[in-house]
Length: 342
Image 1 (tube, helix red, strand yellow):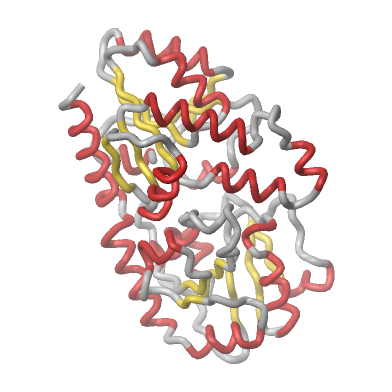
Image 2: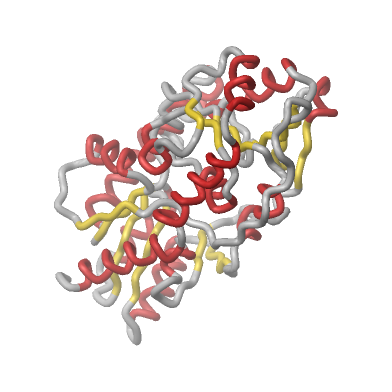
C-alpha cells in the first residue's frame, strides 16, 4: 500500500501495535510509526488535519482499525479509504473449523472471531469514502457479504519494487528447488510440500524461519531462510514458487497471495492452485495444479513445463498490472474521484 501511494503522494506508515513490528517490514523502504491505541491515532490525525489535507488508507477492518473509523468520522479535512486485501472473515471461519480448541477460543465474544470481524468490517464499509480490493474476485465476495453501496472503489493488487535479479539454477531431472515463501499455516497446504519432498529426495524446499518447523526426516531437504533475506536474492535461487492453496477453503479461495507478486517481479515460474484471484491476474502465466494429492504427478507436471517461457509470462503480468507505477496510477485516480465529490 505504501509503495502504491508513494508513487503520487507523500506517505507515512502508521501502525497500532503493542508488540513487535512484523518481521517482513524490513523488506520495504519505509519506517513504521507505532501508536499504542486508535485514540492516539485519531488525536494525531485531528492535529494534522488542521493544516493539511489528509488521506487515510487503512488496511484490514478489525479491532483497533474499526475504532479509528469511529474516531475520525468528524474530521472534515481527511478522506478515509478502506482496503480489503484478504477474506478475514473466511480466515477466521477456517480457523474455527480446525479444532474444538480453536472454536472455543474464537467464540463470538473474542475480537478475532468471525462475528466480531464481520461487525467491524461493516462499520468500516459504511463509513469509508472509498474502497479498495486486492482482486476483482475478492471485491465480488465483499459486495455479496456487505450492504449494497455506491461508494467509489478500485481494484489495487499487491505491488513490489522492481528489484529482480537473474535467475540462478536451472531445472533438471537431478534436482529441483521450490519455494513456499510466506507464513506456513494449515490452509495454505504445507502437507503437500512435505509429500513432494518425501516422494523425491532431489527436491529441496525453501521457506522462511518461523514458528512452524519442517519434519525431522526432511531437514536435509529443507532450507530455512531468515525473514530479512532480500527477496530478490531468495527468488533468484529458486526454480519454482509453489502455492498449493486449498481452493475449497474460505481462507485461501479469495486471497491473492503476495508471494506470487514477488515471483512475478522476479520472473520466477509458479505452480499454484488456480483460485479465482490467481486467475484474475495470472491466467495462462502459471502452472495450474487442481489436485496436489499425487506428488509424483505434480513433479512430473512441473518438470515437463517450459520454465523459461513461464518466467517471461509471469514477469509480463508484473509489468502490466503489479508495478508501483501501475497500482499508483489507479490509486491516484481513485483519490481524485473521491476528493472531487466531497
